[in-house]
Structures are given as structure tokens and as C-alpha cells.
Length: 490
Ligand code: BES
Ligand code: MN
Ligand code: ZN
Image (cartoon, rainbow, N blue to C red; front, side, top):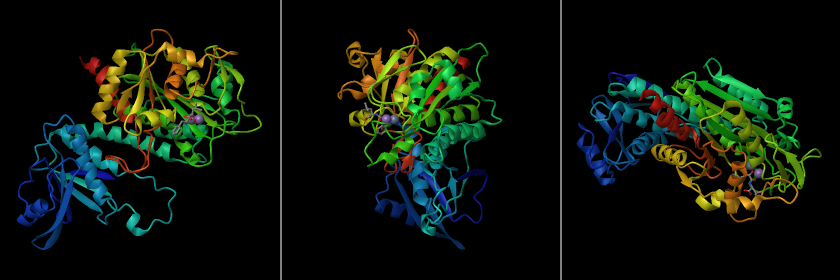
């Protein structure tokens, strides 16, 4: 969807949208619209919408009104996104090809208007690449939105917000791609293309390099696959040359069959999005790079395919991680932590980060705990946890804090190695987090976000269609704004 700006409403406009706060109506509307909206019980609630047709001289115009809720709401930003998204949801496949968003009488500032546009654009993203037989009425028709009467400063505000949208869309693309198209090598290639000419530095480790580094845990997961494994790091130095970077790490299992501890057939296709953590990190880096964030950030992605095969690792195998710690692989389906532990260790060694936050579709158990509303947040640092929580609330990428404790840690002790890769059935998300914590150096602030319930949605939400949500991109972007970029200015 293209978003354009104009001073005046084009003469041929057939669809004009307006934004209304709760309990108000845009100025200058025909009585039939005002009455119609009242009868249809349109109240200007966030995400509510109404549309009607009016005769304006020589043409009939369709007028749509989207509700933005109370102006003073603490959820104002989300509500404005909902208003924009409601318009897209309504008209994306409606046959309308262009829409005017008339903001001329609205009191919205540049940031507010950018929020409406962000919602509008995010809700319009779909992955139709492999659908060659879509019926006419299923195809996207709405191609351009022309904003009229945008507030002063919209150019900068929208450049900033649209960079975030670009990141979210890249994540959704990666997460939606099937595993025969997206595997470690093609993931890296897609990133190479996306980051080309942006000023970001890409570092790629192949199997041989990882072997040399002693990443026996990550490499063990890839043994059963014909696809070689990779680590990809995207480095962006937008801050002071001497400043340590913030580091994000993502689980990128491009397909998770479970390995020899194979998963049941039903629903296994979902495991194409087991690279959702790495996808989110790639998208967040793209957002930061596109808006030239004034911060040093590095995104590290552990990319592996988990398959059963004659060469695959077996339950009971003992592997040695790059940290030197040994792991008894009780269940080859608990592979995410085996990938992350080497990626986390390498990231700390290589980049000496200020703090490290990982994103992973790590456990089914987190979906039992939190469903699809919050990702699970585990952290060894109160300040980091609080700031992530704040960023989550601001962007809608919500987090719920979960515990870490020595009593849980004991549950993954092994009789033969330093640890085993699974604990008992209970507290499965927590023991997974405890496992990761064993690879975090003392004194390094670390957080783990278990996004298994968030990367994919079975039904459409406020700013996403069903499918890949792009969860995590906005969270990471906001965190960088609130921390590294805020202190760079102050
Ligand atoms: N990728 C899965 C977790 C997952 C499940 C993500 C459902 C998204 C939706 C992970 O690798 C896994 O298989 N975890 C196991 C761990 C168990 C073997 C200890 C699980 O959750 O069942
Ligand atoms: Mn698994
Ligand atoms: Zn997995």
C-alpha cells in the first residue's frame, strides 16, 4: 500500500475517510451521514467504523469514519493505530482502489497522524506470493492512500514510523515463508538483499567456522538436516564509536520436526515459523537501520533446521557447547535452547554487549501459561525487565514477567553431563529459561522473551491479518528509543 501526501482532495476521490474521537463527529458532514452513524451506533470507539454514501454534486462519494477513542486515553497510540487499521480492514479487498484520508479538520499532531498511518499500513500487509488463483473479490484492491491536511512535521514522523512498518513487514515475510523456501542459507541471502547499501555490517558464520569455534550444541541440532546451519549477525553502529552495543539474539529454527524425538503430524506445518525469534531480530534491525537509529545495536540469529535422519543426534547424546559446558540431549525437540546457548555465548564473546535480549518460539508451555496475549519475559535484571515491559506496553508487543530461581535451575542437572536439555513436565518454559541463563556471563543484564504464542496468529488482530504478526520488532525498536537513543540526546 502506497501512502501519499497532498494539499487538496483529488477531484476524482470516491472514498474519503475521516477520524473521530469518542463522542464526536468530523465537521461538515451531511446530515444523512451524521444520522446514519448515530443509527448504526457509531460512537467513535477505538477501531469502530462507519461508512455511507453521499451525493456531492456530480458524484457520489463514500465517506468512512474511523473511531479513535478518548483523546486522553493512556492507550492513545494504540487507539489511533486501531482507527487506521479499521479503515484498511474495511476497504482492503472492497473493490476501492484508492482512499483519501482527510485530516484537515482533525486536531491530531504529527505523531498521532503517523500512528494512524502505521495502523493503516500494518493491517494491509498480506503474503499472497503463492496464491495464483485468488478470486477477484479476494484480491487486494486498495493500493493508495492519499493523506490530505496532514499536520506539520508529518514527513519526519512518517519516515520514522514507516521504517518500523518496513521492519515488521520483513519479519512477517520471513515468518510466512515455507521451509522449502526459507532455510538458513536463504534466510541469510534474503537479509543480504534487504540490508544491502544500508550501512549495516553482516557477519556470517558457516558450519566450518562454527565447528572451529566449538559450537557443538548448535551444530548438533543441524546434524539431521541436509541444510547447512548459519549464524548471522547484523551490526548497526549508529551511536558513538566507543559505545558498547545492545544485543538482540533470535532463535531461527527454519523448520522444527522435533528431530528424532519427532513431533506428531497434526499441526507440524506450524513449525515453519519456529524461526520467529530470528525473524523478529532481522526485522527490528531493518527498522533501526532504515530510520538510522542513533545507537549501536547488533542482532544475532542462530539458523538451523531440525530434522530426523541417519546423521541426526539421538536422545542421550552429549554435546559440548562453545562455552565448554556439556549438555545431555534428552529430547531432540528441545532444540531451540541448544541453538541459542551457542549464539548467546558467541554474541557475548564477540560483542561485549551492554545487555542481551533473546527472542525465541521456545516452548509450547508458554502458550499454556499466557495464551496469545503476552510473551513470557524472563530476566536477571530488574531495570532491563522494567524497560522491556514499558516498551511492550507502549507498542502493544506485551510481555508478562515469569520467574527464575535456583530451585528451577536444579531441575536440569544431569547425571552424565553439566546439564540436560529438558526438565520435568511442569514449568517447562521456566526450565528452558534457566537453561539459557547458564550461558549468560555474570554481570551481563539478560532477558529472554518466549514468543511461541505471539509470532503467529490464527485470526486477524488489531494491526495484523491472520498469520505472521511481526511480534517483537516494535518492542525492540521502542526499547532502543527509550534507552540508548534517549540517553544519546540527553
Ligand atoms: N518450537 C517448539 C516450541 C513451540 C511449540 C513453538 C508450539 C510454537 C508453538 C520447541 O522447539 C519445542 O519443541 N519445545 C518443546 C520442549 C519440550 C520437548 C521440553 C515443547 O514445547 O513441547
Ligand atoms: Mn522443538
Ligand atoms: Zn523449536
